[in-house]
Image (tube, rainbow, N blue to C red; front, side, top):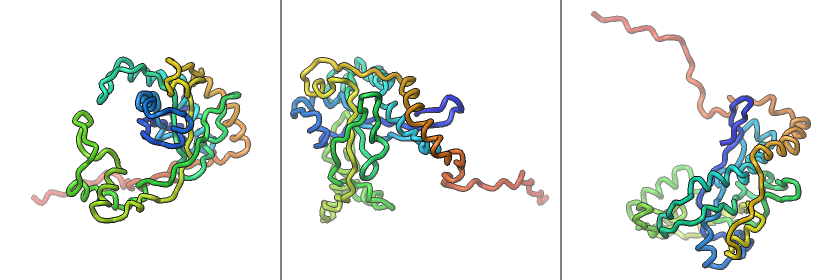
Length: 272
């Protein structure tokens, strides 16, 4: 979580997780073979959450959060978490080098990651689009009903004792349920493409991920410097052009109305 020190309000969120194993555009950009990917995907993380919340989103706070995702502090957090730790399945201890952060737009092209630069460095590089497959459109209770059906009638293929039991992910669950129901798997093709981005954290990130060099040569971006750059490049110019952030009302984002307070309730009278 990224907070504003001046008022302790939340600016935005970063969520990093394991990357999807096969992404054509990412793999083509890196240029690795199957063996290198199996050995080095460990050094890639996917930003599945990355953005700012109102009113900071109106001040291009998302650009700051994007810069924070590739800052020195993120690399250091990765190192602290995974140093001297053995991987669960392969039972290997790897050097905790985070070399690449990937992410994708919510829908279509992205304006958030576009033109995120620090001096001459393009932080997020476009590499292509997804093919428009997924399961997010199984909503309004449909996914929950498919889950109940799959748990009763389908057998998970991703069974690893050390990982636990159950389905590997939502995609597998939906695919299995549709097949058991005799429904075409083409329903998973919603056709909405997402733009894919890669953010190399090192000058030689691609060579490192391909196994051509032993260690990454990292870019240096302390979070403090990222804030200074964002403030001058995006925050102040946007605040001058658009002051709508001043009219921000947090109540507009409330999902449930506050219960009305009618004062202390009187005690019921005794019937005795």
